[in-house]
Amino acid sequence: MAGFRLPDDLKFNRSRIEDPLAYAKDRAVRSWLFIVGDEFASMEGGMSYAQVQQAVEHTARVVSDPPRVLDLDLARQHVAALDVLPRPTLVSCRAGPRSSAVAYMYAGLKAGVTPAEVIHAAELDDAPFCAFEEYKTWVRSSMLALSGQPEA
Image (tube, rainbow, N blue to C red):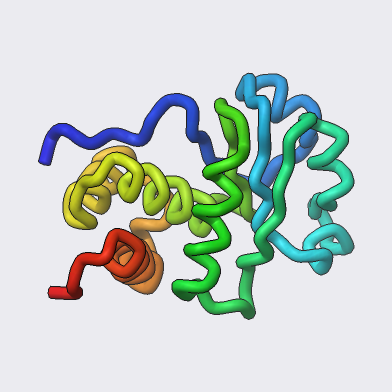
C-alpha cells in the first residue's frame, strides 16, 4: 500500500481560505474546483465563486457542501470537472474535509488503485476527510462504482 500518493498537481485546502487570490498564487495553481454553494459567500469569512473566478483563469463549480449529501452523482460531477481543468488544480470547500475527499477519490480513481490504498495514503497524509467515516465511505463507494468494481 505504500505506492499511492496524491499527485503534487492536485491540491486541496486544509482550513478556511482568507484571500482567494493570494491563496491561488501561493499554491501556484492554474485552475480551481470550488465545491461550496452561494450560502458560503454570505457567511463570516466566506468566499464567493466570483472571487475564485478572479483568482485563476480556469474554474469549475460542483456544489457539494452540507446539507447536500456526498453521493455518486456528485462524484461523477467532480470527476468530469477535474478531467478538464488544467493542472495544477486546487479543490476547495469551507475547511478541507470534503475537498480532500474529492481530491483523493479522483486521484485514486485515475491511478487505478484500490480504495484501501487511497484511504491508507490519506490517513498517512492526515487528510481532513479521514476524520469522518461517512467521507471515507463515500471515497470507497465512489471509486468502486466509477471504476466498475463490485463493492466488497
